[in-house]
Length: 363
Ligand code: IPM
Ligand code: MG
Figure (spheres, helix red, strand yellow):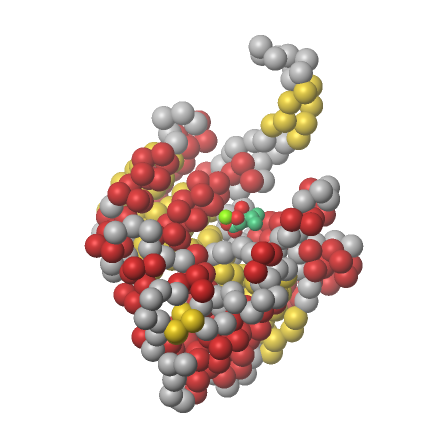
């Protein structure tokens, strides 16, 4: 099993290093090869997604990705910015289905900014379409406004669009995921205003006919944003477009206490995938050894489950993470009174120890 390791920028290299150590501790026949991506690749090769990195990712069975981005690249022209690396990987690898679970671990209920009773036991799955929508729609750019009240003024524009097959395939992913969990899908749209999302709603409704055992509800995105903080446990699977999914998944992440805990999977039609923490590169804490590696470690578990057909190894990682939390170890982002504050490396050490059966000590 070949894994492309793309650590990226900011805290990326630190957290990915811990996930790699955890993978090694499983003693599976994994071949891991590392390549630069994002700002790191721009420094080394003059491009955020060099040909050699893309080739490695294409040849691998799965990709483990850290994070990209740093303020120091904000003034580069858009095609050279670090974010283009992850967008390019998604597009080139056809990773249209982004699964972002938001699970509130019992030990971290108090780390959420919501009341504990609202989030205790929370387990929702956001299925975000990842290769379409206003993120990739053409045409886009800057021009002189051709008409309207501001005709003749400089303007910028993007294009929101979805084709039927794109909506159908992501709807199938959502319904199939719901079948294995709470059997409910909430399709989030803005059909009251946008053509694109009236079409989205119609197509999702049609696909639903094939899943009579799954309940489907439709919700406008503004209401969904509100319901997520009002009664998040009412959701099971949320399916939505690229941009709404970007926003709602960050919101859902915060319900769980820390975005530092949340893994994600981005899958193609054959379950080949890219796995990355839901959080970003956090340049402010990069290199300090304080970042939480658990989202990346849990992303490695998702990789074993979805792309490498190693569900038992995935379980081992997830159980080890639970054990480490139960033992009271916390990085700064999830620390609270009465728990033990540890750094990135110590957290990785503890997960490795839990996997290899050694005891975890509290300090
Ligand atoms: C995410 C990120 C990316 C996105 C950025 C870095 C391009 O916010 O994965 O959610 O907008 O998709
Ligand atoms: Mg985002």
